[in-house]
Image (cartoon, rainbow, N blue to C red; front, side, top):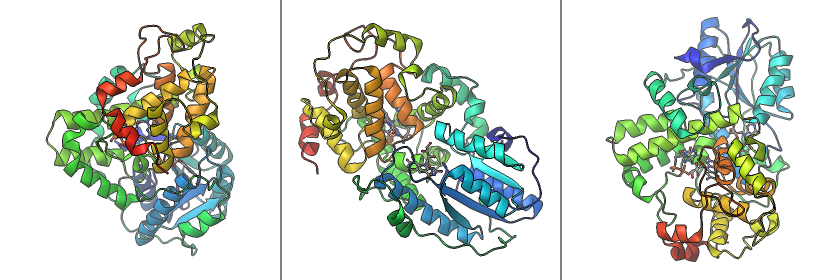
Length: 449
Ligand code: FAD
Ligand code: FO1
């Protein structure tokens, strides 16, 4: 099934010379189709193999919180690669320049990289594919059913992509081959990489501190998966909409940074848990909802703006653009949880202090930003800014899709018309009170520091 995961980015022939895996989204050794393919090419040609990560200092507003989690995870991955006789190199600077210099300096014959639908990554890949004469191959190592294969266009919603994914899943939801110790050593010695010094030298915003939990890295991600399957999965369906119950898996930071493969999660759930409504509900989120987000970001160039909303969403917002807003808050008032709504403030405080927010409240949180900003454009800018600044799993297709769903009705249907929201699904405090113990949640988070 490997060929359906591949996409040649420049049609150039694979030349002789070592192979490099330009790792970006899928930051792991185990269960990584891009690494599997890169090593297969290198073994076939009997040449060395290296893994390279290009560190951009200003990646979509990421702060110390996200860089620390990522770099500590990468340091563990670098150590695992060293045991396989595959050197890992961290390159700093403009990613496209760095990877092109590396390729030339080392007479690389083929560059393999992993699939990522985000605009910034597409720009990097396109520039590299244009500037290099050797083959640049993209491998979808993130989706169980390769995104480009699942559908050739933007899907309307989960209900349209689900049958396409379900039909193809049996062809792709299989075990991975393990990488092997590489028999052709890299010709030059490479320096090892430690997260600390790189972090200290990085000019990033330190005002958003690291989180104590979850701990980064592949090993921790797998531990978290095992414990969720053993203790949380059975009650996932009943507790996942209750922010007071720790009912979600907590896997999103590991999935976002690619320290854990969604395919691994699905394989372990199927292996260790009997089919049940809870397992089914979890796999629906993990596979259909997550792969729908990649579909959205791949095929909708405006995935992070109002123009990306479905036509009915754009229209309904235009019709309600001049509705009176009962409350209006600035980005700073939102960031400091200074609204009139104690539930919204508590959710903001959970996010600022822990780097996560319960999935149910993320919908409420984003919809209130629509209600309390002057325009839908302001709402998108503010929701994306706050989500990506404080969430550990921010800057992810799931986030752009989740925010577009909340504010613009993406992947949702039109509902009864009302002020400001138009036909976009409305949520309010009364609705939350019917779902969970709002006072208990507020008590827990309103004074979190
Ligand atoms: P679980 O419920 O345990 O789900 C397991 C995995 O399934 C998740 O890690 C995720 O990969 C996938 N998943 C679950 N729910 C969704 C969903 N609604 N859409 C897509 N995939 C899903 N997710 C992010 O990864 N990063 C974000 O920045 C992000 N921002 C969001 C913003 C808003 C306004 C909304 C409504 C949702 C957002 N989501 C985001 C999606 C979802 O809320 C999170 O993936 C989930 O809460 C992560 O916690 P978990 O891993 O414990 O989830
Ligand atoms: N990917 C990179 O290739 N280089 C980076 O420097 C980088 C920084 C970064 C910081 C925060 C963050 O949330 C993601 C970051 N990523 C980086 C991308 C990440 O690995 C994922 O590929 C995408 O964000 C998910 O699509």
